[in-house]
Length: 313
Image (cartoon, rainbow, N blue to C red; front, side, top):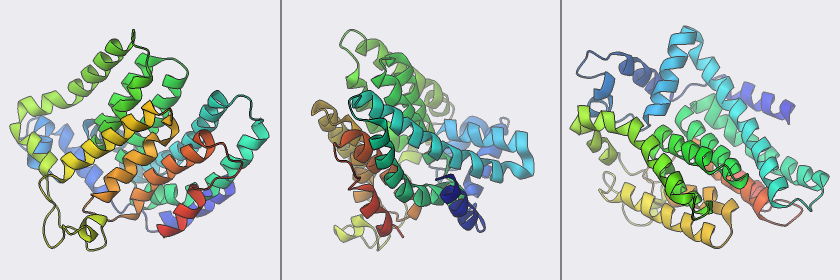
C-alpha cells in the first residue's frame, strides 16, 4: 500500500497544487489584521474562500513555517492523513467487530485501500484541498473517540471539522452516540468550539454571513443540472438543502445503528445538490465507502469502494 501510495503521489503531484492558491490567499489575508480586507474581514472581502477558520489558520502556519516549501508540506501532510484514516477505520472495525479475526479485517481493508488511495491522492497531491482533508480527518477521529467512549473529545473534533469546512455540519448527528447524561455537555462543547471559531468573523464583519450564499455557475455535468436546476447560478436554497438533507440522513443512520454509513450518506447528499463537479469530491465518498465496507458491513470483501472508484476517473 505504501508503494501504491507513493506511485500515485508522484504521478499526481507533478502538476499538483491546483487549488493551493486559495489557501495561500486565505493564509496571507488572515495575517493582515490591520486591513479592511484581511484579518477578521477575510470572509467579507473574499466570499469565494469557501473554507473555515481552522483551514485558514492551518494554511497560515504552513506559509509562515515553510515559506516556499509550504505546498509540498501540505501535499505530504494531506497524503499522510489518508493513511491515518485507513488506520482509524481498522481500529473502528476491531472495536465494532471484536469477534472478527484481524487477518480478515486486514484483507478487507487492503482491497478497499487499493481503491481509496488514488482518489485520496487526487485530493492531497493534485488539488491540495487541506480543508476537506481536515474535515474528513477530524470526523473519522471523532468517530473513533466516540466509539471509545470519549464524548467530549469527540465533540471537540466534530466542531473542528465544521471549523475547517462548513459542509461537515451534518456530522453533529454522531453526538447522539453519546449517552443521555453526557449529551448536553457534549453538545455544549461542540457549540462553544464552533462559536469560538466563527463568531469573531461575524461580529467584525456582517458580510461574513453572505459568504454562505456565495453562488457559482451550475456545471452541466452536475447532478443539480440533471435535476433541472441548470442554466444559471447556484440556487439560493442549495446550501441549506445540502445541510438539511445530510443532517437528516445522518440522524437516520445513527438511529438505525448504521453509524459507519454516516460519512457516506452526508457526502452523497452534498454531491446530489452541489453545483460543482470536481474529482477531489471523490475523496469524501471513498472515506465513507471504505468505512462502511470495512467497519459497517459484515462481508469479507468490500462491495462499495472498488466499484465507486472508477466512476470518478
